[in-house]
Image (cartoon, rainbow, N blue to C red; front, side, top):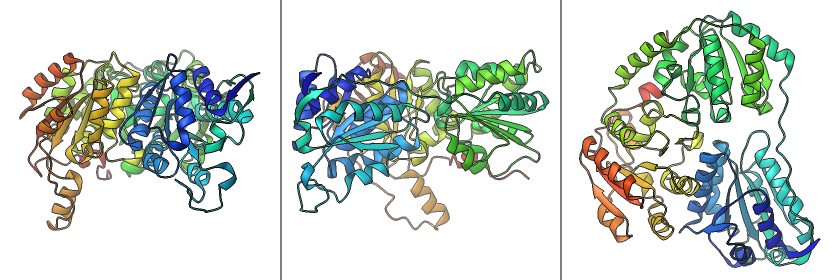
Length: 539
């Protein structure tokens, strides 16, 4: 054993788990941890944003775009609360994010004496936001608690975890065991259920596969299964790009809904199946449902005909093997026609689609697109082609306004040699505009495209249409975004049309520097995308 303090032992654990970056803001409770990061700066770096929420979202972007742990550190109490929206997002979108925070002196926890940053029960609060949370009570516990945190975070359904360390324990010194690493655990597919699933797949005439973020590492297997049984692969948000939109078998939501009307077998792989069962609001008669998911609680939440608890790639491989030499008719031509028909229908969503097309032309196929809760972001969920897993970064069901730009910074830190574009509305962008300073200070070359309609656009439309124009709290007064960006030292420009946006985005990506592009959009001019996201039930 080696004599270390708790903070040093925690940093040793991060390095042993392959963590190369920690996002965070130092504070009195966590000084020892920050100092340990400084002393290990040749092996692990710290990137400091201007707000705790950004630290959490940057860790989320790092994790969501890589599948590896994204780690952030904040002070306890208000620092943790500021970052809590990012933990909610990571929980909802199944991202392996680790929050490392402090607490008040260990002997004062729970006494309510009004200590700096004290919360009534911080550990209970963290447990309500994460998959697992724990406390390091003594330096000797540090390796064990950190190993448990990583194991919980990476095993089964990946979700955020949190570790708190009291102020006095961070600097506590003593003999410490070497950092522990435990491989993530995975369930084994049940052979009997796999055989039943193969029988259902052989009998299906119009099967469909729905993938979610849980299938991010199973793209090749999913495509092989789709071809074997003649099924389109439909995705929503985190599932986009798992089967490349360059493949005829990849369907957007619009083409998927058309196919759903005659579907007789749905195979959900790493997906909540939210789209079909919540947003499409109608189920074909006689439909059979197979689910392959690593989380057994999903099988209770939406009970399928066959529940296969397994890793997405392993479960899909097992199903392929059980199918043997079964081969459905080749459907590439049919599926290409259906995709084209769906694209024609969605052309009505303007001007969003022409702008998204311009971004797609400028963004390399392996680049990252980070959406936002905005008219462009909503439309991108069905109208923006994606060619690889994790290349489309979303906030999941939390629909966290303002997450986008901060998250994109974390994506770029994880992928310094890849293009990263953040697409925001003016409302969401202003939630994290101060992080332009972080982008400049750390040279994080994200291109921020801000569509400025001077409103919280979705709220504005709903109030105008459903509430007879009684607008309240939805119209916005904005700064001059170009002047604002330049004041941070960010190259900034304003463009007025899709062709100009494509050229500006090409310049921005070539600059390899932080860049801001403002696109003015007339308030209320954007076509609602919700007819495609929430179509009326089929009759």
